[in-house]
Image (cartoon, rainbow, N blue to C red):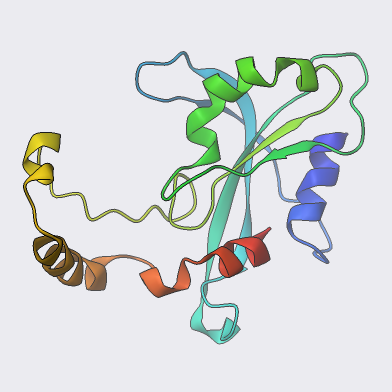
Amino acid sequence: MAADALALALVGAMAAAPALEPCTLSSPGLPSVRARCGAVVVPKDHGAPAAGTFAVGFGVLEATGERAAPDPVVLLPGGPGQAGTEVAAIADVALARARQDRDLVLFDPRGTGRSMRLSCDDGAAGAARLTRTPADEAARFAACAPRLPLDPRLVSTEAIARDL
């Protein structure tokens, strides 16, 4: 199955594909989408693998046709902070034609969604956030960053690409 081939591709030389379990993907204000979800274990710091690991999550929307091609379409979300699994309803509609023949993989880059989400949200309303100065935001982030489960310096394009 194409989803299983993808799981192997996500972990490179890993001997066995991660298990894919039925799941429901949702976003506020959008319909939920049935999928199969899994995760692969990656180093927190690719330059220092002994620093520990964490799970990078993904969802698979299976091909709707009778036979799926072996190579899936992998959605790499924009950002910063966007998780592929959180746009499942949009991707389901926007990529319906591609899904006729291919599985669609919704990848959550490190620090988002099912991949050790990082957030310094202080609950302030959008209007209040607009009045903050860059210095206010820098101070808020400096106070928050040490409490995050993953060092924000380890969330980079290079690290995300290596996670794939």
